[in-house]
Length: 477
Image (cartoon, rainbow, N blue to C red; front, side, top):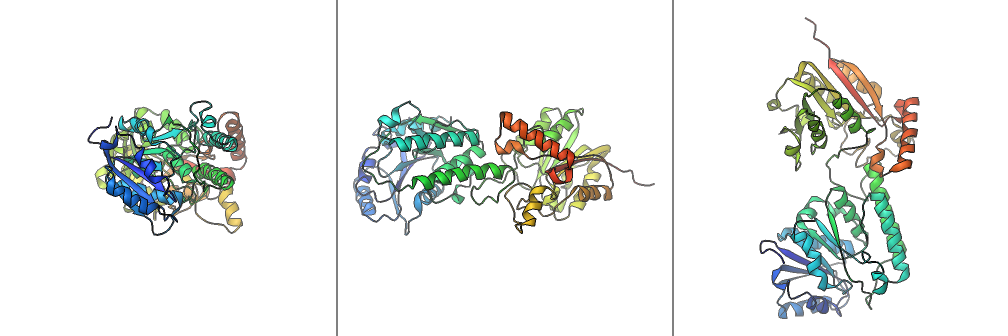
């Protein structure tokens, strides 16, 4: 079933599993045992003889077992973190999580592994609800079944996913996928499983599902159902707010890459409209991040050169040319000059001396070129409200992004541009990034209309960002 070049690992998370651990390991199918590179058994400081059972089994088994006993209890999520970190350090390609209490059938391992081995998914989840009625027939209590369905529907609606179940603990991951997400910053509790789904979804990684049998036996359940439901609900809401720029990232850790905002009323949507009206131009995209906006501009026929301090995977495929450089030190000289448009979308606020970059943008232009700049509005009602309450803290994204060094109002961005040799041709406010909130349909449309009306009435209060288009003022002879 598996290729000999693929290193498959099994992570067994165990807590007080002395009576079940050996039985779980025995049930690993014979057909895949020779293809398993490592079985990592993580005993989470059990109060029974789980570790001793593991030691004894290690001596007589044909399985390549690595046995770990944590010196203190790390929790369900903490135990997974330790196991996944070992999988990364040991060079595994795939890691499957099994529960030491036998709640999930080892007999389903071939089906769980298949999509990952075939390269069809980045993660595979066993689902107890893919087959109608299977969960209840397998003994899932009615209250747990109803809670599972209600929470899963809510999470799907909020995240824009279509998983049949969010709360199965039978999971397999590509180790490369784990390396792409900050799972180590997740909760140590049971809501770790929801947080890692959010991170996989946010990173654009593909989750496949396969049906698994449901089993409820005599194992002890350590989950506080109401507390768990509260935690996962908070996680999903925090993620949506965070994507819109509200939240410090303390609940859900996300990658640092700046994503494309596809909504037509977002800053990227407005910039795209602006470029769509222009004939193919030579564009310099400063602070291009992963190149998602650059890629959109290239699809319009523009030739795009990108610059960013880090080379994010895929950026060279999304730009015509890419140069790595810290814009605090200026535009790298190898980038060249003669650009028709220099774009700095969400860049100036990250710089120590933004005026210097604006002057360099002018030097990089062709004689009849222009610049397009987008900055957040510190005069927006959200930071004003926070400051009025004495809560001028930072968020992971948005206006109060933790990496922002400078803050702009409409007046101050106008001054910055004009004082450094440009005449402003357009300065327009941009509304809230409603697409990041996950709103769709009628609700999203109505909220967008309200937002645009408020911006029209009071742009400096309700404008979330400002977009500026400017052309160089000719130097006096």
